[in-house]
Amino acid sequence: MNKNFFIKKGTIYLIFCLFLLTAVFPILVVSQSNQTNDPYHYFTYQEMTDLFHDLKENYSDIMSLTSIGTTYEGRDIWMVKLSDNVDENEDESGVLLMGAHHGNEKPSFETLIFFIQHMVESYGKENTDDDEDGFVNEDPIDGFDNDGDGLIDEDPSEDRVREAINNTQIFLIPMVSPDGVEASTRKNCAPNYGPFGFSKEITSYGVNLNRNYGYKWYLYYIFPRSYHLAFNILDSSPNYRGEKPFSENESLAVKNFVETQDIAISLSYHSYSEVMFYPWTHTSKLALHEDLFISIGENMSKINKYHLITGRQYIIPRYGGTLGTSENWLYGERGILSYTMELCSTRVPTDPEIVYKVCLTHVGVNLYVCERSRTIESERSFYQ
Ligand SMILES: [Ca+2]
Ligand SMILES: [Ca+2]
Ligand SMILES: [Ca+2]
Ligand SMILES: [Ca+2]
Ligand SMILES: [Zn+2]
Image (cartoon, rainbow, N blue to C red; front, side):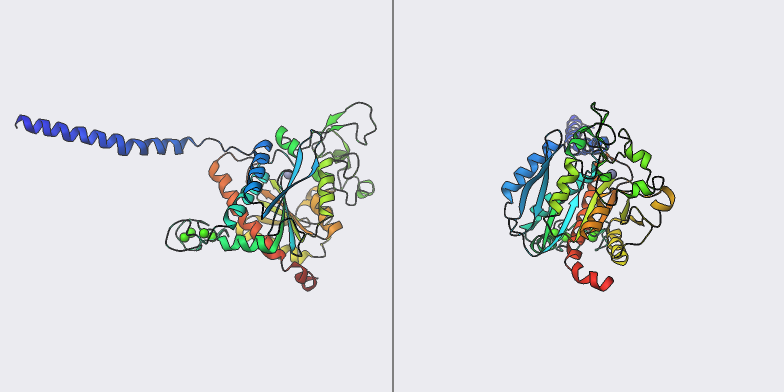
């Protein structure tokens, strides 16, 4: 073996080492950073507020931003409307999507912020082959791998977004309880002055907003045991209902807003347990539109694979009834087909992949609801 060979061999070795450094090292770094998986960062109230103002600047033709009320701590309760001719009240079916009645249920607002971004960004985009597989919109967001490539919902339909925005009025209140979000609490943050507000001193803080809606409160006094009066009247309880119906700025803001609009379907997001409920939450009697509730619910279930539960099947026989929920009031007083959506299998998942998936899937659920809302008026008479 001559000297040249060793030089040559050394050069090859050097090149090999360089190759390792340039080609393999980044792969190692990337795979390591994939493994570390920093916990998911959920929006703060301020970040959401800033984002909405930015989006409104860029998409003012299809998005408006309104404060429907102010919390005890002075935060605006934001309502985003998505629609064409957004500043007009058009004769289109209305959909109401709400999150964070309970401030510690973070996926509930994250899903809606993601939806808003997806909608405004897709609206003006031409139909695009997002996954670059040569087909356009072959796998829309419906919870299924439509093209059988092993990926689910990887090529959303831009046309579908346009159709929803052009033909629906979509109202979103992603954080009903911004104070609760900031404090990460189930209840809001207003002080309580005893169960009925008669105490001179502050006795505790916070009302469970999803017990504060004023629908048939009198039943508490007729059936105190069935409706857990003791727990709902105790102001330190996590389920404290408030001193009177709509005593809270947040629930009153939702009520005042809803009363000015024509809304067909409403979804109120919570977390967790991957189930969906619809009225009634206070009785085993079937709602007048039971069949319609089931039909919409089963179609949502195909997308998110969540279990559709009726009050009759589960909550009421086992645990008694719940008064003061938003869906009871929305349906009972306004005739809105309203659902409670319990997202995720844990209250606040921190795995970014899990959060992304739940957000993406519920874009599909929300789009479905927009589509279905357009036929609800005629279906109502058919189903009754
Ligand atoms: Ca696409
Ligand atoms: Ca594609
Ligand atoms: Ca696919
Ligand atoms: Ca799909
Ligand atoms: Zn909740």
